[in-house]
Image 1 (spheres, rainbow, N blue to C red):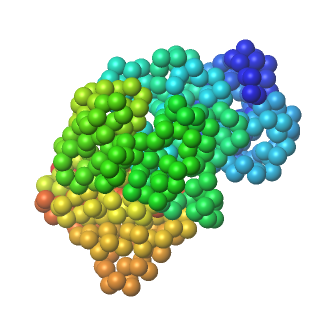
Image 2 (image 1 turned 60 degrees about the horizontal axis):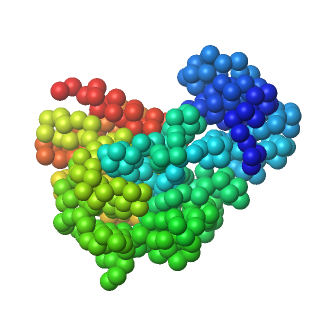
Length: 461
C-alpha cells in the first residue's frame, strides 16, 4: 500500500472493521465506496446499535456483517481498514493481507502540510485552538483525527499550501508504527499522565506510542513540548526536529513561550526575539487551558502565523465541546460540561479552574488509574455527586478514608443532575468532570456530555 493512488482503489475488496458511532468507520466506508471499491463493513455491535451510522451510508452498495466477524471477510479482502479501538494483535487482523487505518490512507494521499497533536489530556483543546489560530491568520486549515472527524472526509479539498491539524490518540499513533506515513511539519505534545493502562499495562508502553508522533520528523520540522513535564523533556532530547518549549519557567536562552500564572504568555522566537503570543485574558477557564492555548500558539508560529494574529485568535478562542464547556446559568449557578475529563488529573484541573465553590459530578468506569490524583479536588469540592461505575468504587474508598461526604452513586445522569441542582447555591459552579471512562452507562464520553447537557436543559428555570 506504500504507493497507493486514488485510481488504485476501484475494484479493491475492502473490509472496514469497526463501523462505530463516532464517524471514522463511516468515513472510511464512504471513501472507498465512492471510489468504486467493493466494501464490506463488519462490527460486533448489531444493527440496532449502529442504526445511525448505517443510515449515513444508505446511498452506497455496502455489504454488512454485524454482531460478529467472519474470517473470510479478512483473509479474502485486498485491504482491511481497522478502527483504532481494535487491538493490533486481533486474530481476525492476523488473517488479513494488508491492514491500514483511515489515518494511514489519508497521510499517504494528502498533499497538505501536517500538524500533529497528542498527549494525555488537552489534545482536543490544543488542536482546535491551533486550527483556530491558523484559520484566523489566513491559512486554509482542516481539523480531524481523534476529535471525531475522519480526515478522509476532507481529503479531496486539501492542497499543498494548506495545513491539516490532526489530533492523534496513542492508539492511532500505534497503528502508524513502522509505516513511514506520519512526518508532521509540527508535532505538539501536551502533558503526559497515566491513561489507558487497562490496555497498555505500563506507562512505558503507553508513552512509547506517544513518541511515534515525532519518530519520522527531520531537522527542518518542529517538535513542541512541555518543558515542565519530565516526559516532555525526554521528547525534546530524543526528537530529530528543532524544538520549541512551553512552560512556567523557560531557562535562559530556551526557544518557546513562557506560561506564567498571571499575565500574558511571552515567547522567545528565533529571528524575531520576544513577542506576546497569548494575552492575559482568555475565554477558556483554568491554568491547564492557558498551557494548552500556549502550546497551540507556539505551534501556530512554527507553521508561519504572525504573533499578532496568534494573540488576537487566542483571545477569541471559545474552547471545545465537552471540555469545561459552559452550558447554562440557572438561578445564579453556572453549569459546565467537562465530560472529556477521563483521567483523575483532568478532574483536579477542572476544580482548580474556578475560584467559586464547585459541586462536582464525577465517577464512572475504571481503566486502572490512580484516583488519588484527584484527592485534592474531592476535598476542595463544595459537594460531590457520584455516577455509578467501577471507577466510582475506587473513588468511594478514598472519600470514605478521608471522611468526605458524597451523594449517590446514581445510575442515571438525570438523577445526578437533580441532586447537584439541590446541592448548588447561587454563585457556585456545577461541573460534570468524571475522571473516568463512560462505558456502561453511556456509549462514549460524547454521549455522556450530550446526555448531561440535555438533563441540565430540562431543569426548570
